[in-house]
Length: 409
Image 1 (cartoon, rainbow, N blue to C red):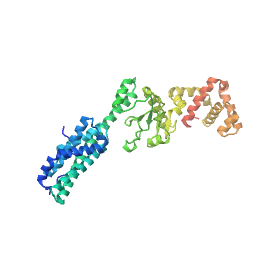
Image 2 (cartoon, rainbow, N blue to C red):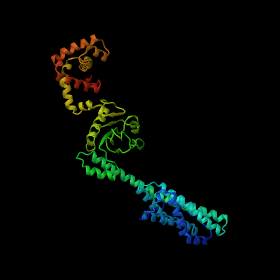
Image 3 (cartoon, rainbow, N blue to C red):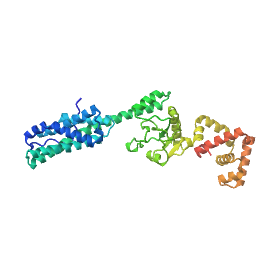
Image 4 (cartoon, rainbow, N blue to C red):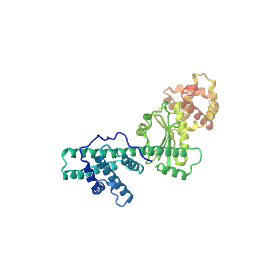
């Protein structure tokens, strides 16, 4: 399929002061000039010094000849557009992108080739005794030729990069969906998709769940961390981080800055095949952040809040535990309940040491003893049973995490 000629290329400007017969003379010597240009390009642009690669050398030679032909055609007909040759360089630019090379090498070759060709053809003009006006016109045509083929190559390169980037994103999205799906993960399928997505398969990974924003603005998209698989369209947005505890470490201030201020929860580090588990806990932690059980802002690591996640892993069951373990506190007033609950939790956590409880709560030891006598009356001997004490710690800790609402400590 013919490639479109890029826009914005300088067009012919009408009659040229260059004698028409000069085109014939230059065309006769075109192969010799092409030899000189090809040798100079291979010598000065390392990417093109591939003498053993016959296909690559043929492409280089064809590109040189076509650019020189375009220059001579401009001399013969300044109004000519050179669409076919522009299309050739458009495809050359696409080829550089599809092979994963930078456009710099091709652009350098064009500059080098243009200078060499202009130097050789300038000598021809001098030998013919052409005046300065004609030489200036030749220079303008040479510039126009280099500009046209460079623009065509850049347009082809950009088009291929755009499609290549889109395709790469699609492949990485498919890979992420496979890794975070509900079913078992086949190592072979992961390897196949990872190869197509240009992604190195790590032994371990962690999944980051990000707080969604009301508006999906591109400037709010987190910076793509090296090697991370990102899906900002899912709810919540998610990012799989390879080897987060090793060479691909993502953490601290740099990681928080990369998230552009979004609250986020980092799931536990797990074997790659179990990445869905990391997503599960990261999503659970993000939900607890939204409720204020975990810090609402910044980055929360699940590994630092395992007991909280465990407590809230089955919230209906946790509610039953709280209701049963803390039932004796239903006998006191709403004003007394928070004070007695915080005293009981501090007493249980401090090994029943009254001075430590007083220091922890910033109250007088006598106040602690008074409250403990009330608790003894409410709970009786159960306060000294290990199983009951564990249930009380769990129930009181859950209430403390939720804050003062709903009667929590």
